Length: 191
Image (tube, rainbow, N blue to C red; front, side, top):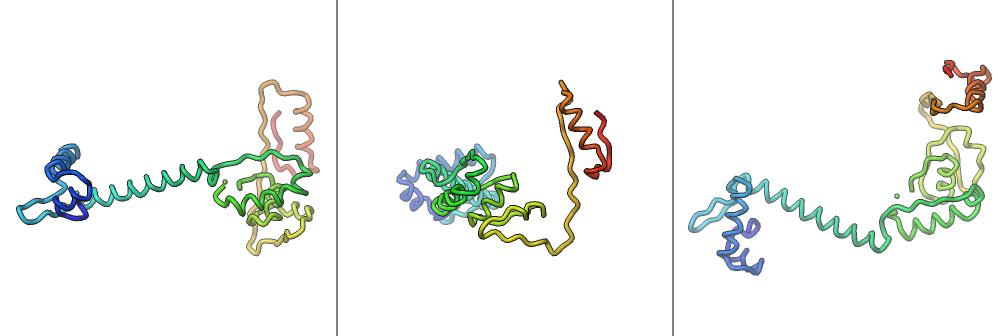
């Protein structure tokens, strides 16, 4: 109705009668508490709230269509999330090629990693770039090139977290080692 601005044509497109359409629009206006259409005997026009409601309704329908398409793609395994567990040797042998092939076939499935060696493995598979610490340059992989950033890099501050309940002697010994001047710790930990 809002797009045709003609009750007869709109009713025909919806395969309902004109009185039924008119009744549904009046019920919607009552529900919303606003007048959506300005009606005369010859002209039907959208009111300002009607124009705003039409824009919002079109967006809702587009989002619904997108959601339906996404769900259908997910049912086919074309989108989604896959968690892969692996051992270290796999990262340096077959895993990058498997991931690259999978990514080529299913480009909308979530590569998200945090261990830096894994990032480098994905870079070797041709799956993007990674910002890694300079110490990772010791990991040599075919096709991986390391470059220093041109801009001054921020200082990386590390912290140590531990569960203080049931603290073991092993943990205390570890914290003592961390506190030694050898590691350049600026502040001592209370343990």
